[in-house]
Length: 280
Image (cartoon, rainbow, N blue to C red; front, side, top):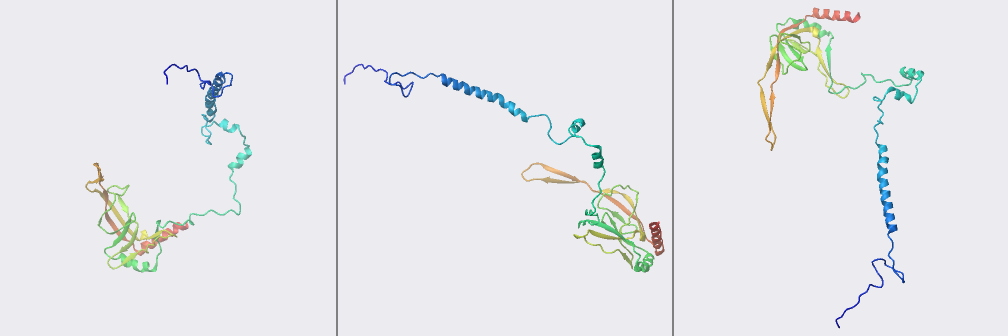
């Protein structure tokens, strides 16, 4: 092959302008339509960007749409409707219940909780009390099982009682009347209240006490004692912090100053006065 110069001309069909050219000549297409389509698309997108916030603005308002009329003026509330005086009077007047309406349940029909408790005083003068009360009253020394805040304490005259809590609303020197007792006895005789009934699904617990007119038991508040300050350290695993809990309990101290069993005549007189008051 000989070296030389070759005249390389343009190809018969120019691929830069078109894929199919007419056989006579190839004229590149004008970009007028493409520019028009591009400008129309931009104009449409700009119009959407302008109109869209206006459409969304309809859901944003400063007016409350709830049913609460506390912040609404009274004229605006009554502007949309008118209530006649007859309707207002009928709404304020209570309407009678129909004859076939069921009666509401009373408080006695409601079942009590098994944990509820009711205190009952036995005020019946039985033949055994009439016979043995004079014998109990003549005994020299008596004891009593008194209940304070639901806790029983066996006491005699001159005993000092240290309650395991601080009794509220009392001061040293106050005289307290202990009127809840389940036992009053001496060396030979004991007057006992009926046994308590445990609570169940039908009724609560029932605790029976002796009639307070059978005896007189008084206690004087001596003072309030306190235990030494106790500090307990509480820690948790994998923690350096130690919590210190301080505890200092207070206790009320009582002294039984008077314990007396009433005679049969005094008890019958007290029952007679109670019956007269109930009749009047």
